[in-house]
Length: 77
Figure 1 (cartoon, rainbow, N blue to C red):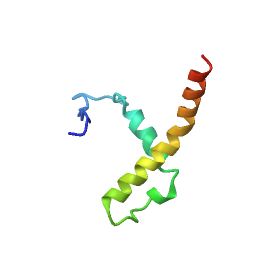
Figure 2 (spheres, rainbow, N blue to C red):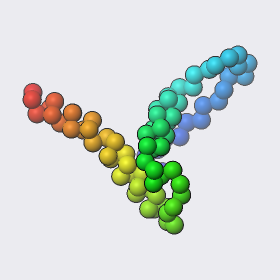
Figure 3 (cartoon, rainbow, N blue to C red):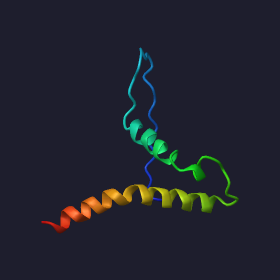
């Protein structure tokens, strides 16, 4: 509904050894980034909206250095 496209990736039937799932590393990397923020490691919030807001804030903090680099590069052109 909110512009999110959910894709279910099934494992191959005859799986032998390690099989890399498409784009799985993006999700795992994002969970790793969230683990750096102690407040998100436990469920302290009473309302789910507060937790969603904290996730938004954390990702904004994480993306801010990249946004600064992009804007600095665009200004020098």
